Image (cartoon, rainbow, N blue to C red; front, side, top):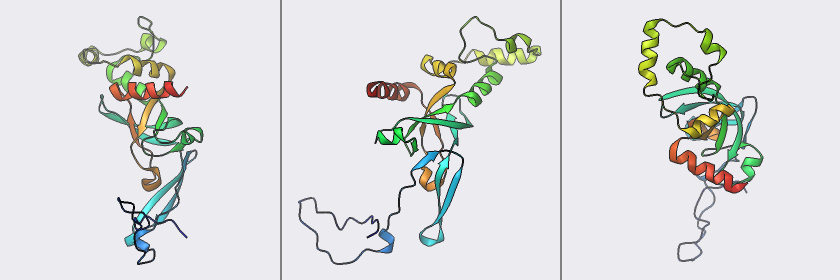
Length: 202
């Protein structure tokens, strides 16, 4: 039969059955889902209407994720799917779709934070690491970092994730259409909401 995206086969809002006056059309076609999983990159191209292309990500394990409050984006590894708003089966199978809540590697963001602010994320206060003790900085750099440190604030929920080395992020791209799994790190109210949803599942 083939997958169709038409609405003629649906009943009207009053419940009346619509008259069947034509066959399926090419412009109404649908395709099978990509069911993107985490793994070494494997992307297929699909020819679409007008000679355009879609990029089906069948396997992918990295993406660009933005840290909104800091205004930066870094390429990082996707570790697993932590929550999905539509279907628990997609969590079990680690299927990547838009709006999936994933755990990503925190290392690129932690390294940027350390170089930009001169502070280490995810460590107990008062304890200096070996790296901090050995790094020598010029007085000009010290002044610059001190100025930045005045505004360096990371919420406690995010800091605990940095300590674990994994951050919660939301996928905002469409892996089956664009062949990319990009998104943003969860913060503030949105992070609190999804943490509550994940705890309710346990």
